[in-house]
Amino acid sequence: MVSTGGADSDVRGVALVLHGGRASSFDAVQSQHLSPLRMRPFAARLAADGGRHGLAVWTLRNRVRGWNGADQSALKDARWALARIAAEYPSLPVYLLGHSMGGLTALYAADHPQVRAVAALAPWLEPSSPVEPVRGRDVLIMHGDTDRWTSPTSSLSFARRAVGVAEDVHYVRMLGAGHFMFRTVPVWHGLSTSFLLRRFAEDTGAAVAPAVLGRSDLLCRSSDPLGVTA
Image (cartoon, rainbow, N blue to C red):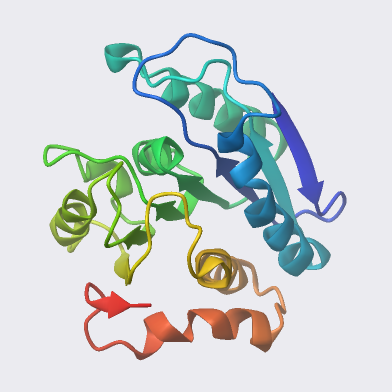
């Protein structure tokens, strides 16, 4: 199920927000589940800061809770959502933001031709996760260094392997943060949304407020984009 927010007219770009889940489960996702609830503040921030400039924000609630191995249920749902966006806005840039399984989904779905940038938060990656889907895209990966659910080491490895494939890659090590983003909440929200909004402004010429874009200055100032800490 997809819901929309942000711009409802004069749309210039679309952000798609993807939630986390489980390794294996065909149980239906409910609106009160924590995984989709966790992404509401991100969607709200994108809508508040980008909506007036033409950014439409879509949130996806997956059909089922699991990735489910080769079925890749969440990726199928994301591709369905991207097909809907493409049908309604066939020439507009798209920006993906996802947490955990949603971060994995966003990185895998980045090969859609309209996707320009991806923000993946504590993504559920493996050493073998392919980087080809992010070719030519801007990528931000944020991962807590005390995460015990998904691997910050695999995320950093993915970022390193994506150098030279993606247009631009940033890896942010969130000091003392775990998987569920309870610590330094403003940094998780502000940096990821600012990263996407900066690319949206570059792509469309939208006059997003400098104070909003300034949240991503940490990335712009870094001499080592794979060594940023927050």
